[in-house]
Image (tube, rainbow, N blue to C red):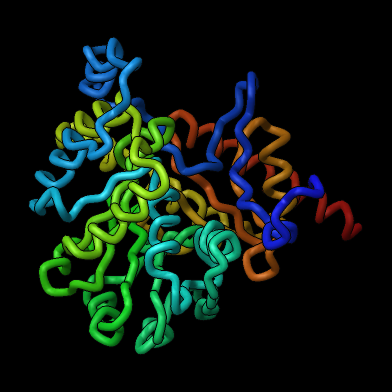
Length: 361
């Protein structure tokens, strides 16, 4: 840290991304990426004419992408805001709507408290219930902006749109932001509530269900007025925040509904099989509607399980946070990757059982 860093950032604890291995043949189940390649139409789009135009700035309004998103959700283009990943969209939300503070779950996406510090927004972290679910009563009459990941991360648990509607009804004077990064893997989106609630902002990403984590694309859906607020922030920060290739790739991904459906269904089927296998091995597994599972092994600590998987070249995510230290988050990979993960898990549990029996002698 230099002596020139602004004083308000000196104690900032940045968000820590999952490990990104370089040059190692690891089974990577730690960052919730889609195990399947982008749509063939995406590959075709980025190889097309836009690649020849990279010397030119991208369209600051990203009209091709905005129109594709608006068409898919049957909204007006004026209700769509696009960004460099949903993280940037969330940052815009903090800048635009954080004046009275933001209330969010204590165990949730790690960027929420980081953004609170970064943008000097009062962040109020609300504990989850004992079963890791969100109590909607904690977000009614909040007196500030509400931010909820649905499904939540890292738990994978979700609220029904009717529950979110209860939160919207009691917070008419503040925005309610629903971060739907994982919604396409089994949860129900609240986009249908937009016509009735002018305080709703729905944030989504292309990183998970659209197979484009490396394309860095996210978007918000809201009333024209709220979308206008976010665009005001965007054009005051970086008008060219989405590059030409990502605009073309995102539009193609949004339009290829058949491929999107095929990939998400495949991930869901693999998640369900993996959950059944883990339960049979004695794990505690939360009910996930995301592309990951949050699970606790029965006879070994979460930290030890994480380390032993790592020794077998398999990456999952673990946090040294007391409330969730016994759990790991397991991204759903391809069928082949999850088979390797399952076999490694059986070996680890058998080894731990043998070690426990040896210690008892």
